[in-house]
Length: 381
Ligand code: GLU
Image (tube, rainbow, N blue to C red):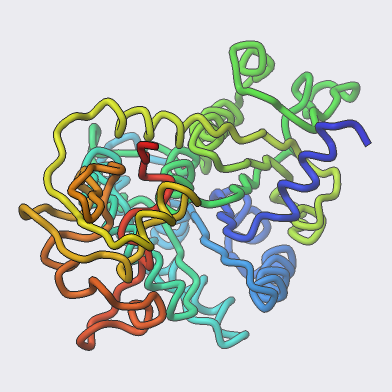
């Protein structure tokens, strides 16, 4: 097997945190309803892989689409307030449908409506992430859409392809599956040229790749292939692999078993590197975390995350998401990183084992075992 095919196979079959992005055309094309065989098969597959320990997050469109069909609106309005009103009518119905299809298997779903400020505001970003993690802990499938009825211009993702890229960053997903109307990216428009060839793997989404795309728009969908590739580019830079594949005959098993379907966009690891660069060059620490010898050794010599068990005390007060220094017993700074917890919270959880943290200290549920994840930390050796 050529090296790239091997890489693709290993990457995909190792992926466990998966985002599935379904657009309005895919969801509502068959009979203006979500109740069709293709979706039922997809849900069956999700149920199957969940039982093997996979996590699924769904980014769904359809709020505006359901609103349009309920109110008998045939042409998508351009007036923002009308689009917002349609989304407001349709979002509830959309959730009702997702709830119906999953409740057959006794699986609860949770609605997450995001606005663009999660991108700009790290605190909001972290809260959204906590909520998504908590949903997973409860065994509910997160169903994510843009909060269309309150999103305006600069606060908008614009299309759900972009939203799914941001979600993959939030969740630190392994794999994002973008379902669309063709089985991946082709050398020419496959709807018009029968000799068009599917591209099984894209190393990097660059201008050469983007120049292959000829987008068509319709009443239901906002993003075309270009916006899918842009989203793939964003996700790949953040370390999430992406598959663009056929949503009209979604075959999750073939995808997750590493079969040669759709187009795979290779993830880069530069995001972690970039983040570490930022941590490295940022001089201003907001506070200090002192650790015991065992933790210092685990961090410096074994590149582990910082866990509450090894923390002795903190100095200065800081919030979650801020840059802090990590110090050993001799008062030397041995590392720097972005903390998942505020100084106040660390005071409560320090010294506790990870399993106690998972269960919750003082009746409080927290979901990150690490105080600083190794991806958010640099150590000085
Ligand atoms: N968020 C919109 C909806 O649910 C759709 C955006 C898109 O299709 O990209 O109707």
